[in-house]
Amino acid sequence: MAAHFSAPPLSAFFRKEEDHLVTQGLADVHSAAMFHSLYEVGEILGRGAVSMVYLCRKKSTQEVYAVKVINKALCVKKNSLRDEITVLLRVKHPHIISLEEVYESDNDLLLVMERVTGGELFDRIVRVGVYSERQAAQIVANVLQALEYLHSCNIIHRDIKPENILLASHNSADIKISDFGIAKILDPEGDDAGSRGRGRAYTSCGTDYYVAPEVLKGEGYDSKVDLWSLGVVVYIMLCGFPPFVEDETGLEAVYRKIRAGALEFPHPYWTNVSSAAKHLIRNLLNVTPHDRYSATMALEHPWIKGQSDAYNDKPLSSAIHEMRRFNQKRRFT
Image 1 (cartoon, one colour):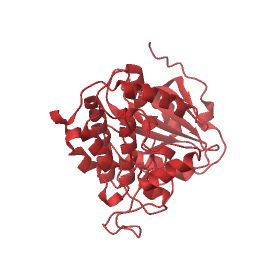
Image 2 (cartoon, rainbow, N blue to C red; image 1 turned 180 degrees about the horizontal axis):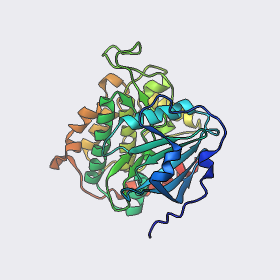
Image 3 (tube, rainbow, N blue to C red; image 1 turned 90 degrees about the vertical axis):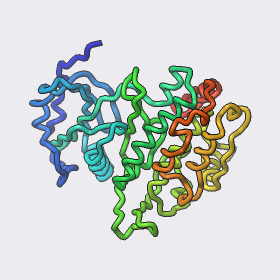
Image 4 (tube, helix red, strand yellow; image 1 turned 45 degrees about the vertical axis):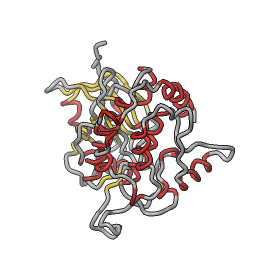
């Protein structure tokens, strides 16, 4: 279906109320007044608590993007928003969603983003209905490549989870990491430098099932938290449910199991999964950060490198069934 670019009422972009500039001091940020001279704006793609997302098209190239219009008056975490923009302006990688341009007025922030239409990874897997370890490994390799790049830039994502792993389009297997709202730029030379010369972070953040044990323990942490979170994602990809689940005590049981590293591969869900896949997961979900794989180490693993004897190529039909249930649950929690 052809996109429509009859401009919606966008007077809110230019309200007269005064507000400080979120992007003050950042390079490559333009006045919002320039936006309409450069872009045509189309239909609404989505709504959030403090933002609207529109289809837009650059007049000079006819390239189509998404523009996220953020109402600064409703945004209570302006520093976090600035941090997210700072990170996205700094990074360029084929498996990271791209921030193309930033515009700001007194009251609104306009983020022109790469348009990604393929939806979330787990939704795609459930919709397709058939996939194998080999396909899973290719997806995980792409995520690892993005993490290796981020970590080389001293950036931690801190919220790797299925919702933030997107597909570029409905017909593509091209992975895009999204949502850098709690990403952290580490200072490897600052006072927070760790014993191995790596900067550390201390803020407790992340998402319940995917948060690393060192975060829950209140310890300083580094980029290894992203590898833990990815380990949880890989586990779910191969069996359909997370490695650390609730009991009658609720989420506290999840946190207790994470802190202990209580990892199991229960029968029958893991019977047909290769030992190589389990070996990778054990090394991603190592409770000791120093002993946990880095992205670079994981990329050298036989399961990731595609060595023919590393896979069980049977369809992961049981995982699809369980993942469908998991998807439904996470939609309503």
